[in-house]
Image (cartoon, rainbow, N blue to C red; front, side, top):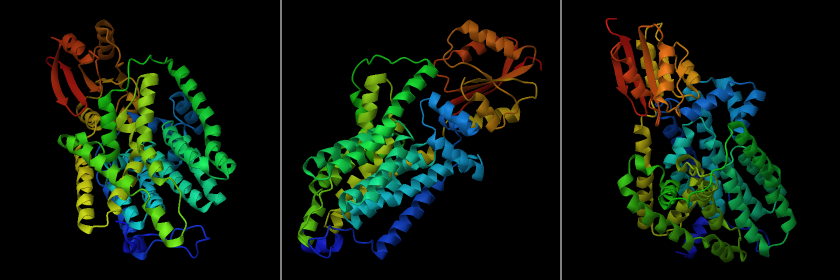
Length: 511
């Protein structure tokens, strides 16, 4: 693999051994292929962008950006979120509106902007060929596609992670102050976007901290690395205190270790996306594939160092493999630790930003293979495993609360009330999708049948009909209560089961 012809074709050159190695500008074909990848990313993310209606968290986004900036900040802090993404989205919506495509378009833009950063980071770490493969895998990753089609801050987290990694690698190799400042700026943006980013930051801190133990200029690097944390991490502590006080929450006592099955599912999602949507039967094939890719990447991790030694007599000492591996696993480890502390985790969302590190390792594993047939076979297998979950995401109908509300709006009479088993954001849902009446929210955690019976009786009153929308009602017995209460005075005129929503319509007998 380490032949002279291979390295002469795919590594950077320098003028003299005494000069620090610099990255050679991308070739014309490299720029053309990168442009093609970005166009592919836009096309894949625009396809069915509004095919699914908003879900609960996106309605929280819609509520937040409808507030004045001062109230927006207070609301987001009270819910345990930094307001950075929501403030940016508020200004975006002022220009482009609040339609599903408009709000999700901001995430799409952020996600596509991270593609060239993935490319530049891999090219600086290894070669243009590795960079193109890594960028292609990132474009086709189902979790990357999902983040670009949701009005939530995960696209901004991925952009900050890719930009900080590129700035960090450039700062390590060039030693220039502006790149250290760029790294600090992107890191602070990530930390002020979501608590989740602290996992990525701490992983970078640990790897570079070990790397610095045998390097000079530690004080400068310490200021660069620790500065963002010293500014933001105290704010993270205050944020958690505020959010718990506002929600009157108490820390839960951990009941045991993070389940092994969740660790395994999280690892698969970091590399292959939400495989359960389409490729669940392939999960036992995906684990050996991860082991093979990581092994190949590990064997090729020092290839660029060897190339520099061959070309210029000097070596690049940036800990690229360790940084990208730590990036990929940091979110999984962080979510697992948070589950031990507070007893809750959501792997599908919070683990996803680690995919950047995984795709970079995959790009190295494929791009470093010198044999064309082996390289194409491995790349084709990786793309197949990545694209299968994409079909699952495209086919997924969403929660379908949009379809339920619009059906009720088209079939209810003007005086018929609507109960929605969704205590939070129910009014926002109804207003956004044109229900035509202010809904009556039914608490999802209310399990007392008598309380629910009284609520239904007060709502219906003397009217001749009413509607019930059950959105992720969980263990709420409201449907059974309504079925018992309405007999024999009401007849059922509609009963539709959608993906995660059920709607029922009732009218008095004889009406």
